[in-house]
Length: 328
Image (cartoon, rainbow, N blue to C red; front, side, top):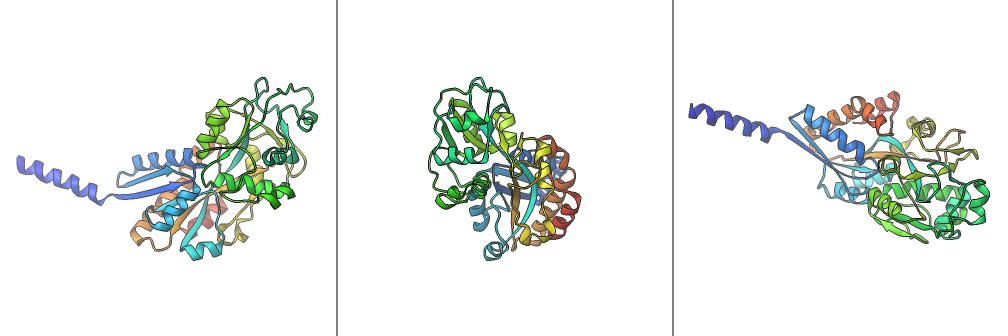
């Protein structure tokens, strides 16, 4: 009897040791859906344990380059040349919207309109009060409070910041010249928040605050979003439909290394600040680990698509999934 128990325990230990562990870290932009995916997949596949830690795109890239994780999440895309130099392969996972969140007492969700120029001027520090004439002219009938504008931005190296500053660089020549785009830039004004939750927390606490974050975080924190002017001069609200309208314009077949920018995309219904979130994989990953990761990511594209939609992300179209699957 005792002998049988010992043999059984040894068998369990052997199975535990044989299990494949896949570790990921990086962008907070896709973290809500990645954490749902890793849990669901690990539950359904006991032989493969998948984890993902939200540390920001910059930290994730540093870790994958150092070889301390198996895959990195990043919203800051690398060109094909940058991928080659780093020995990485980059593939898209999802698209989603970066939204502008505000804390304005008495102003309902979506009621505040911000033009491209006004948004850029706020982040340049040129507009400092919510009752400024430039904002009031866009919002007749909206009672704008006489509050100081507190600009909130990311404190860490962030793919969400890349998407946001990439957009500002396209709509404002002054921003492009003075600040530019990147995961970390020299911000003209504002206070920093750590990752997307940090930005949301700061905006929620400070009356008169404005910030940017991935849409799911704004929804979960019950923060009000601004309506933004898009490339066609139309004012649109953030939602799955407006994110999808932007994402539909992506030409993935002609995107070297899957590098893609979806900011300021034309279209009457397009959300202006749409981004792609990627995974970065080391090319020198052992074959068995590559096989396990390929199986997991293909599950994300198929079985995980419904959960992504529920969390307000936009899954990749079927033809793009085929392209990505070939790369994996």
